[in-house]
Length: 175
Ligand code: IMP
Ligand code: MG
Image 1: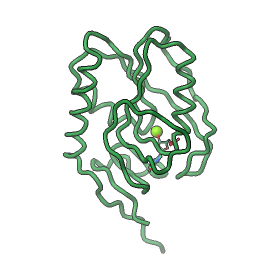
Image 2 (image 1 turned 135 degrees about the vertical axis):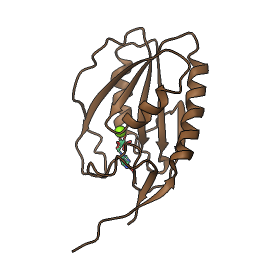
Image 3 (image 1 turned 180 degrees about the vertical axis):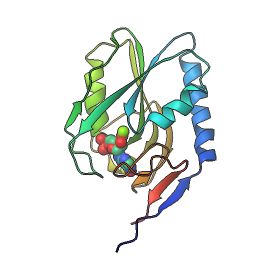
Image 4 (image 1 turned 180 degrees about the horizontal axis):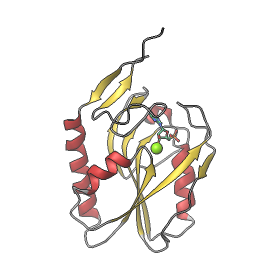
């Protein structure tokens, strides 16, 4: 029998909390006097979104969207489908997309272009983790938590085959 892979801590929950607080501060300053729509990409962003919004000092609205990518568990194919349409019109709104990790960038390339066509007043991106070494298409991240090495990460909402989302720290899978 093979032993299950053991995730190793890369960032502790305290380090993440500190970074999330700084992002919340930055976002609150930049959107002062506005009520942006925070649009989380499921499922990976749900823990981050929950922590982030409770530290904001501005009013916000929240929605989530499911995107399906046709690829294996560890790689994105670049063929992305919006599983469910947006529940609110975003025309004229300040939209801030919340994602867990930007890897090849193919998912966000598709989704940001899809949103831009709906004519939001502004459109920005906040991602907690970035793996720039893997990028296949340029993506500008307006609010970034951490840059991570080219390793498969799990925890803090992020999965490997639907496992490990519940880990409070950000971990890397051992090879
Ligand atoms: P991209 O299209 O390659 O940028 O990847 C998009 C999505 O793939 C991310 O939002 C994650 O949901 C998932 N993903 C990418 N890298 C990792 C990883 O290291 N661990 C877990 N999920 C990942
Ligand atoms: Mg994601």
